Image (spheres, rainbow, N blue to C red):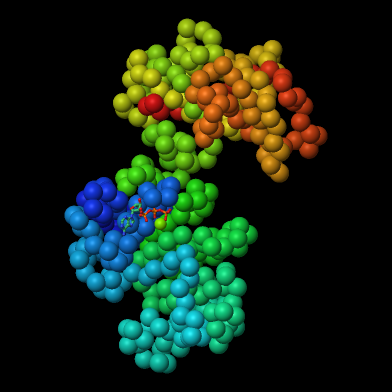
Length: 376
Ligand SMILES: Nc1ncnc2c1ncn2[C@@H]1O[C@H](COP(=O)(O)OP(=O)(O)OP(=O)(O)O)[C@@H](O)[C@H]1O
Ligand SMILES: [Mg+2]
């Protein structure tokens, strides 16, 4: 890790009695791409606005390269911002739009022109300099907004759902563009999205927020494979969460008892939470791709297995998903009504089609290494 150039400590914000941001600590390293991810209303924009200086905190401090900027004006912070809705000035050409922050900083005209062209080349749009924003597509406008924010080389760029208004294909393309620009400039970026896939593909680290607090901060791998709570397991990707009870723990491994798994030894799982100890009820997290589907009779080589009835098959291009019902409680997340008994398993689609039939009873087996016991 290099020198942290953005440091947030004990930062909080209330609106009346409502806590929009509970006291929050967050260090963003120089050159890091950090994403604030979370459901609507979880405090992402609140935190970003405080960092930008667009609103003031009730308590806490913000430091940029060690300097306290908590109550400084936005323009003193050397921060660039890009919002969801481009916010280009409609009466100015693209070049004038991009030159605007340079004029504000009294850059001389000749230098400014050079910097504008560089910024336009950076977003691969040198040919639109003389056009007006209305003569550009949504994606082009967003790239101009990006160019305008980058042109004065701020040391930190904040982006609040910058791709929210774009269609899927353009969004995918722009994700790559932003990553490329991030690599080329080496700027620290704090990026906001509520799209978990976008967060997974773009970020060095993800700060997952829930109800004004950090639910978990870590690499995409940390959050996906080592979630600290059911909320995190549920928010990132699909997961099956099954009720279980801890039989014994040794280091980062546990054995759990759970309905549907036979034998006094129960099933093995990984554990990353020091609070999870013997006798404790937990949720066993199993990702769909880690559930191995077997004919009910077949042997499972010592892997824990539960049986379930196939209710639905979905072929989503490269992946096939099986939806199943079992007697095991807990179930797949996010499905209401079904008293949580539905499970999902996923595997690459086979070119010869699938061999399963709805109504069939199947075994679902997993490796202990792929299961995570989470405090329930
Ligand atoms: N000016 C305000 N006055 C009162 N409440 C506010 C104000 N701004 C935000 N809030 C509340 O604070 C909470 C957090 O809002 P925030 O905009 O940070 O959410 P968010 O995570 O950015 O959500 P979204 O994904 O919908 O943009 C919300 O419940 C919101 O209603
Ligand atoms: Mg927001």
